[in-house]
Image (cartoon, rainbow, N blue to C red):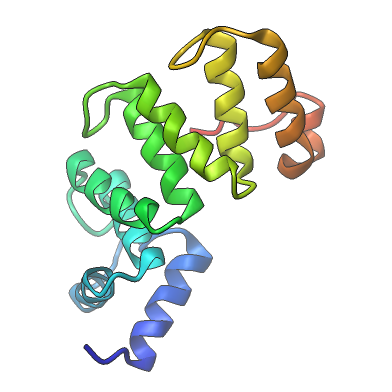
Length: 160
């Protein structure tokens, strides 16, 4: 299917702003669906965000997981991280800490700081991996410079 300039613009907007605006039009959604069905990982990720947050569509964790999975399988780090969150929190899929860790690791391998932080939390709690405070501390230290100075001082906003 032919990719149009307006389709590229849609992907650019969702990449910049994270997901569709609350007042997204049907045309916007239709273009995002077409791009997602064409296999555009950023569009798939952003469609997943729309469903996860209920922005422009009814909130639907199962549908969010479907699109996060498609983007994650193509190597999209934010999708990999959020897919891990969905498994950790039993949202749209059965709770599975080991599966969450698997997806956090894939995102972490690409330098995704939230995934590194979440891996640290999983290690500290012994969820999906053996409890190991030293490894948890190491993950937090790897993530800290990428998360900014407020994180290093322990004043960051929660990830979720």
